[in-house]
Image (spheres, rainbow, N blue to C red):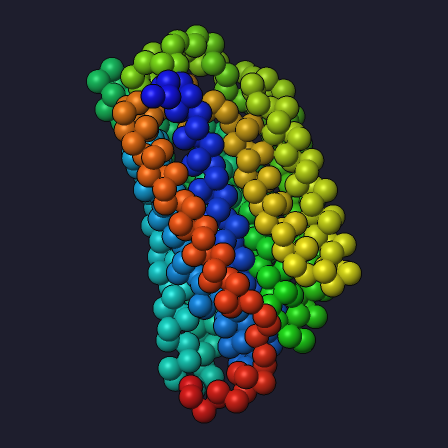
Amino acid sequence: MIDYETLRIIWWLLIGVLLAGFAIMDGFDLGIASLIRVLARNDVERRALLETIEPTWEGNQVWLIVGAGAVFAAWPLLYAAAFSGFYFAMMLVLFALILRPGGFSFRNKVRDPRWRNTWDWIITVSGIVPTLIFGVAIGNLFLGVPFRYDDTLRLTYEGGLIGLLRPFPLLVGLVSLAMLMLHGSVWAAMKSENPIGARAQRLIGWLAPAFAVLYAAAGGWLMLAVDGYSMVGVGSADVPSNPLLKAVGTHARWLSDGPLGGWACVFAGIALILAALVFWCARARHHRSAFLASSILVFCTLFSAGFALFPFLMPSSLDPRSSLTVWDASSSQHTLGLMLVAVIIFIPLILAYTTWVYRVLRGRISLQHIRDSHSLY
């Protein structure tokens, strides 16, 4: 049996991988939805652009479902605190994610241009809102979330949706938006014929530098102007979870004082290099290489945030001692061990069928095919 401390680290890494998997696999779907009115200029082009993601978006969201389920089972205190603190933000995200398949299903049911134009705007909003809110949520983790536990571990949250929209989290939200728009543009360049592909390629030339500038600005702000959290009194990492059995300081720097701050900087540097590589590959029309670089960029960006926060999962701005960490927010050792066995069995299956599906659906979407099938819609 793996010891409790090691299991907690393994599950911290696994949650990061699952969330990164969602950002990579569903990220280009969100990016395409955000840019549908920019990349496609008429009805045929928009239908063709949507065809690049319609067959796979449901499978891509498996990563979100698995990630949320894993957080519920592996980190129940984090799940409860996050759903209390980000309740209205999560409702907005869910509402937007529900609208997206509605747009896919209903857009082509009526030929009226006003009907289709309305659904195009709905699809655009359904891409922008979740992407922005995900980034805002991560930004708020660095500032601390207004919750606390009493001596009986009853949770109290004092805040609202507007309170989350502070300058630094909004900047992180823009980083998220630029990153997934870039990811979506790379996908569109790889899967679409001209003129959609040409527009996507030109947009990559703007989005890659925009991401790099916003990401560097967020990193500089985090390093110089955001007070971090640090563990002052560290108890045993091999005991049952209780957030109140520790002391936390609030005058540290996330990147310089955190135990994995150096790795956060390394991954951030790799992400910036990859942004340049995506730009170069797109200019050279190496679209598959550009998509691979874009996927790794998303992974490195998310893990740079995770490494910077470690060992904190959700810091508390009301009572730093109530902050949730890797060592005091997990399920029991037995539960983590059983779940690890399930992950070892099912994640390879998910990867296998995902690989098979994308292999079957490889190739570009033809505008002529969309025109020929116009009578069906």
